[in-house]
Image (cartoon, rainbow, N blue to C red; front, side, top):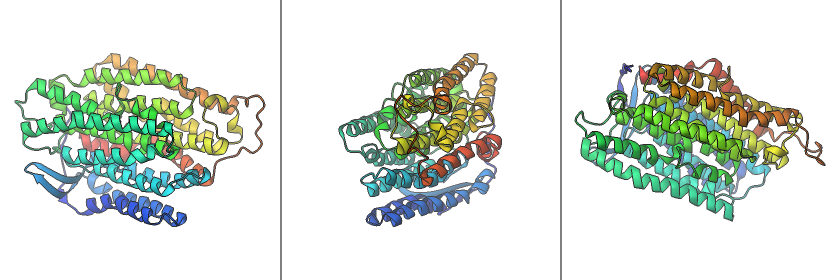
Length: 499
């Protein structure tokens, strides 16, 4: 089915993009300078997050109307520039990253202070720089710019993964940085060079049908470049380049939330799908039969990661493998190359973000309140932590795809898109993954609400985590419900992408 895409508005040069990009960077500088004053330091984080989100929101109405904002920062070589662009596709990720930074900033205060964590200034500084990188990726006008900011995210999140500075943390951080930098430099850099030779530039078109390549491009080379980009953006968690993600769970929970919901993995799937839609284009992917085989390939990741998640007793490890699985929904949807399939994939960038950050916030709240990490130790905890486990149950329903939570919209669009494509084997993948979602999320909520405390343990002294943690997790959970009942806010951007 052909996807009709047209730019109905104007292309406007605007420094608004530069200011939006600079807000988290300025915030990082202010945070680093105020380390001896914790209240001031954390105020800078919150204020920066609010300002960034407000600036992104000012672009919503024009972009939905078809306007594209651009701003060229530097020209490196003919056809290679550092240029920013805000279009409908950009806004999905920019809104997710900027809005969830607010929630994460408040949550981090309660978590880091509640556990009396060390190096909180470094933590908040690197967190802000990670958002700077994520916004840069969202607002990239070309592959070169996107690659630069992709690497910024990799480098500045290394200290966050290694935050505890023990053997386990350094091992997890080493795996994290080796996987991401090796794939980026070994696969993406050569790809960019080849694409530049083939096309003379690295600019993304404004139409998802067209792509970057000339009509007479060599099919074998284009197919090779497609594979390189799929695995080169290893933050997308596609197997077998997914091992960094569970290993990074040694980091504090706010970092896990950053990795899984706000920035890192979303940078991966955003870059992957940006290249698929705007780099290769739907017409070329369809002509070379790159879509459906890739959908089946990532379908393997969806199912196998879910099976592995079922075996994990550690809550964050289970959530990590859930993320590996859920990320591939986004890629699968785009690879269906149908309007509803692409819609399901792109809307899941937002739907997964709000639900998954809720789950990790809940895991952190449980740890702060009880110092429990394992699901087998959480029997009956919902009796004394009802808000935390209530939010966890709602977010779990979203991951499963149950109405009226956000994940239902994703599953519905993906199923309709699969029927449109005629790839009924993908339906089996979606149904199997849904059953597996129930199998690894259901026992957590059931044990917390209906299970018994382990022998010898009592409820005395166990209560909800600080309000600075509970309010953000409840808010994120509520937003998951709202965007499930009223999905049009994000869906308007998706419709603007696919026409």
